[in-house]
Length: 244
Image (cartoon, rainbow, N blue to C red; front, side, top):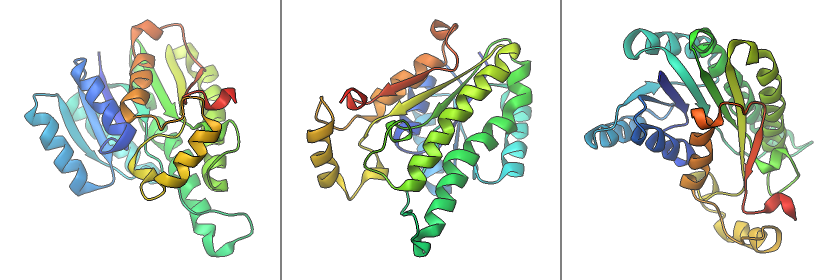
């Protein structure tokens, strides 16, 4: 197996995914813009004997993504798996120009950042005998919910990007799938847990937040040979949210 890259890998769902892939024997690049947290997480996992390495990266920098992926190939081996966990939720309300930067930032990181990292690794993915990409959308990208407009639009864009890439890249034996988490107990939800729990009680049959590890299990599965005939799929991991 080639090298795996996980963006947003220093916290939340990204970190849980890094740990799962590394424990399964993969060499994993932890890509994150938070340099201090990245260094700390990488050192901790390396001390556990896991084959991980740090990739300081801002996914909004397209040229930087391409350069970082080229450096990974030169120093760690060719990339065969990309998981795009980098994402933010910001204040973005239609017509509220005071918060227009929230829209711009969400689109730049959640949607364009997903494109940038895949584009940066595409030559290596095409050269791999069996490559996979897993993008991260959200149930909010599939149905309106407890989110701001920029977050919903950016995550809906990730769904469309995933399906189109699955169609275009199948000829290169590259599988492109998407995991759409429901509401998950991550740093992104910190500070609003009470309001979110009220929402869960009403709208989610399982009536609880998901755990990062539960989302990571779905992501990890889609990167394996067990999912060799799955591409263009969107897998909700949401406690039943979309059933209601």
